[in-house]
Figure 1 (tube, rainbow, N blue to C red):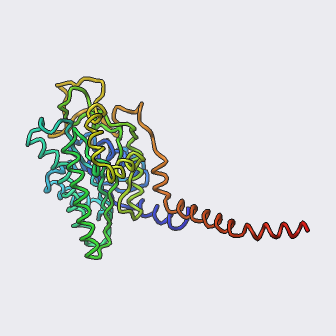
Figure 2: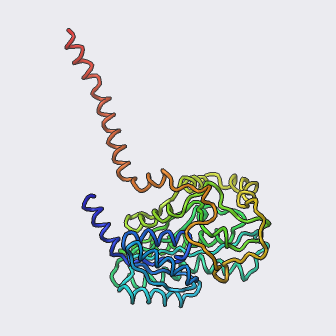
Figure 3: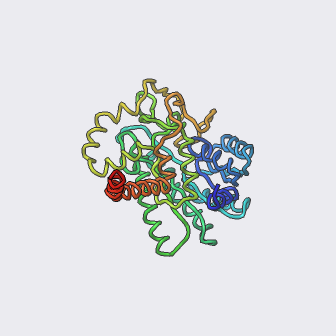
Length: 351
């Protein structure tokens, strides 16, 4: 390990990290990832039992943890959680806004109250978390805020209008705030990490108005890949990180053929998000209250989920890959330029 990477490893080991939505899914996987690095972690979520389980995992992996039972849609609760973490660990270095809520439904079937709630959790929860983090980071002019985004922050899909709208809003809010921080010459850094379809409990407890149980649109990836990207983003200066080739394809395709994608999703966007299993009308959802049960990082799609992708590897090692390709190109160019000289010398030697 070179000196630069060694310093980064030391920094991450002593970091104080806050993760919202830490009880399950990507947040739970991220808690483990930072726990393995020995970080001190504030775990924020609504379900105390799952947060305590996550805290035990973090401690067993070598980190420290404090549990903060919090509804991120309530600004006062988020502020109180931030204060509790700061009191326990002295500061906050990294804040990860990951908490989300969604509704699987055509727009016309969603009540105003439910739409507002999903937006408050996903979008305003990110705003409130960013506010609480900045209040503390500004004292030292230091810190990293990670917004967990999605390919759906660039390309919306049917049946998830509250979630897509919130992710679009997070991207706009983050871009505006980033410019303000640059204006103020702040050293606090903002990064959005955009995810593909992930195998999380989101599809087991999201509110559902469809006749069958929801599913992520394949290809599906395990949440540990998302956690690895988040962990990496905290120590590397990137404006945005695209995770998975499907994310890259969706974002770039929407820049050029959005109308064609509208029509494509009108045909396949409904069936692609519905499994063959019928919906249980008595099944609880987590929109207003946390759902009890044995949920952790993974959802029910382990059989179909991929552990990782070469695209993320290429993203992480973009600089050395670029340098290597540039070096190979220069060598090939030099070799081509000197080919006539080598040819002439060979002919001279044969005379």
